[in-house]
Amino acid sequence: MDSGVHWATYKFGGSSLADYQCFLQVTSLVRESVQRARSCVVVSAMGGMTDDLLQLISLAERSESVEERLDAIEQRYVECAACLLDPPARALVVDAWSDDRHNIEDLLSAIKLLGSAPQRTRDVIAGFGELWSARLLSQVLSESDSPNSVVLLDAREVITVRQTRLGASVLWEESRRKLAEFLANRDPKVLVVTGFVASDEAGLQTTLGRNGSDHSAAIMGALLQAQAVTIWTDVPGVMSGDPRKVPNATVISRMSYSEA
Image (cartoon, rainbow, N blue to C red; front, side, top):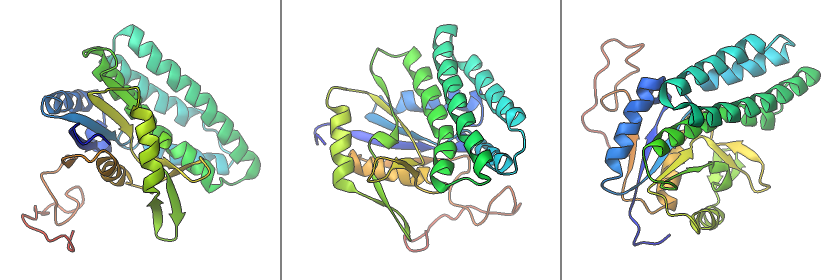
């Protein structure tokens, strides 16, 4: 990467993208960050969306109807888009979602025939949530900025990994080459990137594992030689327990790298 271009990487998880109000807050934070450096924004699926997509797979494996669940996912996403975008931009996002729905339905039909879902199919279906978040956020940011200043990057086009028994191992040279090619004719102020998803050596979709978007942000930060990687969350720091389950959970003020 060009060392003269300064990047900062930010990651927003599912709870930070739960509804349209959360998207507006994220949009405000990104616009503020761009004043300091070019921003790579890595996003997770909307809160609960990945679980909903995995539930579709479970229903298909049991040969149960998936239409009601798909309709609920569509309604949530379309309503969020309606609150954020003007009609022309909204139509682009919703039309793209409809195309994805047809693809998901085809995959679920195949699962019903097989009675089980291969891991590759699970990865493809589970990865749609990040694509939908990135697509929506990039469109929202684009509405109030100059043309081409906001670019959407499907991480599957760049991040290349090899799956090992210890998880996904990044192929750095290949990933750097692909990112350089992607940015060769682009000059974005904001790069909105899908978290969680990647491609393997054969170019087939895979994932970095559940909650893998933090890993995605770290990878993109390294590829861009970012000045910093910031993980945005809805809690005030690293806590002693999940505050939703542990009422007296406290913020840990100091922690070593090994403890983290």
